[in-house]
Amino acid sequence: MFQPLQRLQPDSILGLMAKFRADSAAMKVDLGVGVYRDPDGHTPVLDCVRQAERQMLAEQTTKAYVGAAGREEFNQGVEELVLGATHAARRAGRVRTVQAPGGCGALRVGAELIRAAAPDSVVHVSDPTWGNHLPLLGNSGLRLERYPYYDAGHHALRFEAMLERLDRAAPGDTVLIHACCHNPSGADLDPPQWRTLVELLARRRLVPYLDLAYQGFGEGLEADAEPVRLVAERLPEALIAVSFSKNLGLYRERVGALLVVSDGAERADAVHSHVLQIARGIYSMPPDHGAAIAARIFTDMPLRQAWKLELDAMRMRINGMRDLLARELRAATGDDSFDFIRSQRGMFSLLGVSAPTVERLRERHHIYMTADSRMNLAGIMQHNAAYVAAAVATELAAQAA
Ligand SMILES: Cc1ncc(COP(=O)(O)O)c(C=O)c1O
Image: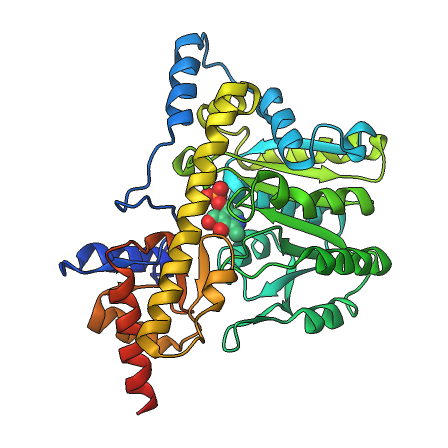
């Protein structure tokens, strides 16, 4: 049976992690894997999570099955966090939510839903996008196409080209959009651009599939949700995949959710029945531990307030490191071409250098980033920013010579 199967290349990010671990150089810098790091380089368990977990374990009386939709109080908490307590789409019964195993699980369930409803439709994904979007959506059998989004060489959004391409998409197609903190570019649409895009989606009858994996890392929990709220208000249908891996630091617990917005309450119920059947057919039901912790944080005011402060601190640290690296790059290169890092948001930016330069940064300077030159800014520390900037300047100068 297994004879036809040839060994595959390891996932590029996992391969990079292995190389980093094997590197014995003291000055090595990990800008690769997408996890938050504190000033000491650790990916901490948030205090609010520790507290909620202790309370939850003390009160837990059963480990019986939870059901394909997961915890209802978690799902309601997610809707409230993402759409707000009084959003019209919620009041109209147009939104149904299921808990999912991480943002990835949510993305895949949503893809299966699209395939069930519109098997011949196309999903348009941004160029560039997060690498895992391609298998998560494409392996469900849907056809993927790319729309222009960001020019890494010029460090600029390609908004006009994006609109022009989407204006030619077929009605009923899906458009996958990063709701905030675009991965890998860190370049987001501003509010007027979001409004223009949403009008285009409405006019062309395109269905947005929003990926919200970094709520709170852009401008804050409320501001980062604004595009999602606009979409759910203005458009009849939408899918929203949410991840709590980063903003609650619950990575390995696999906490996520899929919100589906339909054009009426009755349709929302019908769609929900399909979502439940899809989940049942893949993993039966989502893991409970992390969602139970998250639900407690969403609903307990002191815990929620503590979470907000911890999340604010994570965002501020990353923005501080953006600032520091941009300053060091300006000092090392003598020009301002890396100032864009300062204005971008979320964990990532694209340095905008070639794959051979990325390789030289790794081989000669022990600085690790993905081949597209994506940097996790949380990997920058006070002690390594000048080192990284000097290495980049050295390699760019060598390349120019
Ligand atoms: C853009 C984007 N979407 C979704 C996810 C899903 O994350 P998880 O499945 O770990 O919750 C990630 C994680 O890196 C991401 O970067």
